[in-house]
Amino acid sequence: MQPLHNTASSLAKLSLPPQLRCYPHRVPVAIQVTKSVTVRHSLLVRVAHWLTFLAFIALLVTGIEILISHPRFYWGEVGNVNTQPLFTFHIPSSRDTVPTGYGYVLPDQNGWSRYLHFQAAWLLVLTGAVYLAYLVFSGHLRKHLFPTREQRSIRACTTRISQYLRRNKLADELHTYNVLQRSAYLVVIFVLFPLIIWTGLAMSPAVTTAFPFVSSLLGGRQTARTLHLFITIALVLFLIVHVSMVARSGFRARMRAMITGKAHPAETNLTSREIL
Amino acid sequence: MNPISRRKVLTAALAATAGAAGFAAAARLAQKYGLIPPDHRGPYGAGEALTYACQRVLTAHRPLHEFPRSMISKQPFMNEIGKLPDSFKASQALNFSDWHLTVDGLVDHPLSLSVADLRALATRNQITEVACEEGWSYIAEWIGTPLSLVLREAGLRPEARFLVYYSIQPGWWDSLDLAEALYPGTLISWGMNDGDLPVGFGGPLRMRVPRQLGYKSIKFLSRITVTDSMKHFGKGLGSASPEVGYAWYAGI
Image (cartoon, rainbow over all chains, first blue to last red; front, side, top):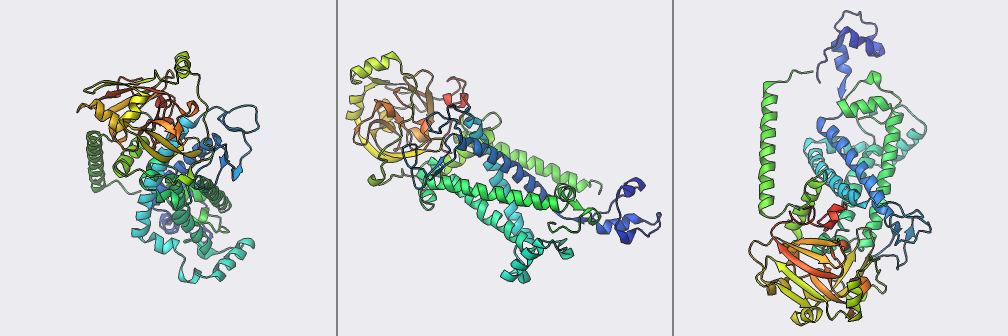
């Protein structure tokens, strides 16, 4: 915990928690305030969070752009306009070889989209590798992400869901994650991100020529491409829920925590359940 | 805030120096072993160089993966082709009997080979997938002469580093590093699925690069030049693709 050098002016800006308000003004309030300022996220977690965010947005935008050049999806090894698609997005395409039903072709932006897609993929993979090592060796994974003994039951999950639905206030969650949060983060870190990387590699002709199992274990190149899309949709759904929960629990406080690392309980909406 | 301590400053300075030195050493090693692609400059060069270097190290010497005959696509997709020059049509009228592939540059014996010469040199077939950067793909049997055997015939000079190849269509050219050019799976293809290579698929001659995306397999192949540097070809980015925004190395 780092001491704060509070001045009268910065104190005035803080809305003090009720238990502090009765202290005389000249008492070294700084000490009291210091106790309630907590470090929520380590520097490494914060840097990794924002680099991943940056990479993810770049991958999402360029991925959509690449999709537009062939908005048809197949199952199996091969697929093209002469084969039956699994499903088609009924949108205009950036190529005139795809029958879309639209009388026009969108401008081709695949070149830079592909360059940026793979560059952002590298950023994601390298950040992810450092973050994973940190998770394991710092104890963060064990302490904050694996569900605790009490949380490891269906009942704990259903209880927490019903608490969400009843909008219950749970003060004990101020300093750690509940079972649903832990499960969501674990699925994203250990299922969705590894799968999105795997399905991506399964579309690389160099990789699948050298290591055919990368593609064949998934069921082929086109299956990998379709799964790549499905996992993207799952990640976008996670992003939407994640940002909604952050917004509900006090957007400014949570953003401050993820940027500066610190969050002041006085600034935190205590009805929130999305803390740490 | 804590004042910044001397120890922190020293640690940071040491870490920065070590990082910069490590990066410089890695870059020198990569340059020495030919792991830097010609389009490594610009905003996306870092990602491109990482992909190229990693894939060269991990995949360059792996054998070609082929599909069973039963997986050959019944209706392979014939991508659209640009306008062909009049000389192509004249050659087509002669059933391409006058078509010649020239091999020049850093070779001991420059060659000019007809399709019949290539067929006589060696015949290999492979059942591999064409994957387009747009996302679609098909599997076909490709029949042709391994590029490596043509290069052995011509005799590569020791300073050779890249192989530049041209389509008869103006402005369409590309290049391969030697790892790809000498790879046994890289074919100069003149046949497809037990017949001659149709014009729609690049006949009479097509460079078939099975480990990279379809756009490296350029159609209507007419010339090969061996060089030690890509600096003086086009804008020096390795091929026509980076000049319109696409990566030179398409192994992704």
